[in-house]
Length: 245
Image (cartoon, rainbow, N blue to C red; front, side):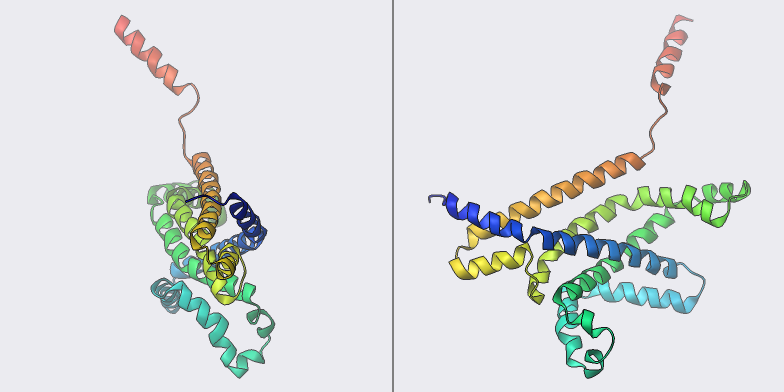
């Protein structure tokens, strides 16, 4: 089978025109989802039992139901209620991009909240007690001890969730948002050339995920503890001196 390079180049150019929308969906939903997850995990570990149960219910709801159904209910379901159409939120909820961002953010927040909670559980109690013993305030204790340790622990799982969110942006095409997948489906409906179009779209997603993986790997390396400079040569000198003695 001959490769139609003219068609592939034209398809790639059309898909790249939709790339800003994909990046907008991804960046906005991950940012809002991360902030919402921090709020949920704070409620999840607070001392008020009612709030803890609400946080558990939120996590169970958005982790236990498919994202596709959530987005359909948000975009197509809420518009059926007259109270919603007459509310202050209707100018936002009637926009497909806003509904896609809200749906993606609320879904990923349920997963991220459990990731952050797992990171908090890995913080050694001895380090927290040591910080309190030297007079650290609650804010300083969180900034200097709890957050760095928890972040290093949950970053691998967090990076996986971020990659999944990049791929989940393709579902926005189902609520009439023309990002990369939406434009790909439109091209397929016009040309009936499924293989070439989806290969071009897959290549774009692979490149985006590669950049995300490398960026998060760099952040993880920056946060990882490393031995002090000169530590290894000192050990070698001590070993040599022991042999000579």
